[in-house]
Image (cartoon, rainbow, N blue to C red; front, side, top):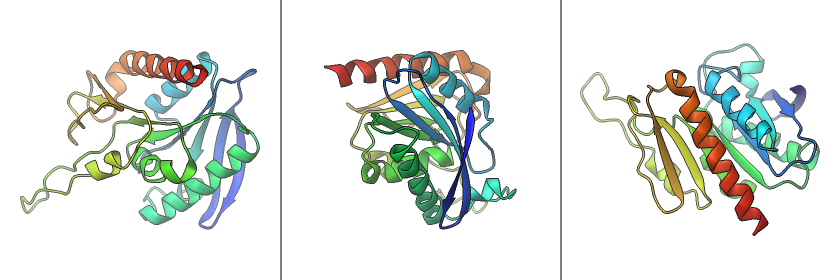
Length: 208
């Protein structure tokens, strides 16, 4: 992958771009809150996209590029992500149908910004639907509204033992349960199979 440095209002981001020779579309993925773009499920999804003729990009948020592990506030993540995606769409990924997504926190960012970016689809890896109960015993708020706000086709690859729970499927939201926890690491073959099938469906729908 070719690294591309992109300035945002909150520091420099970095996109690792793998361009297809004759791309069917583009897939742009963001990392989780405490991890990076080397997460195995992200790499798996990007590899599948490349094998299916999609250009792919893995995006490092500015706080990670700067060497910090603590995630930035949501509004900063959304703003930096938007700048990166718009840059890629105007240059390296120009003119391609766009699928946005990411792992955990990165999936949340993609969902919150998909409409404004005109995405044709959203790919979520381990969406953190509802955090575990707080120490006080109080129930944490659900993030289902972020998923419900997405109006384009969506795939969620979710571990059947994910401590954040399993989102419900809908007519446009496909939920593929794999035998794993929130990391998705123990069933990457199932993750790859789900992503491959869904990407093929997207490319067929764009041609029809």
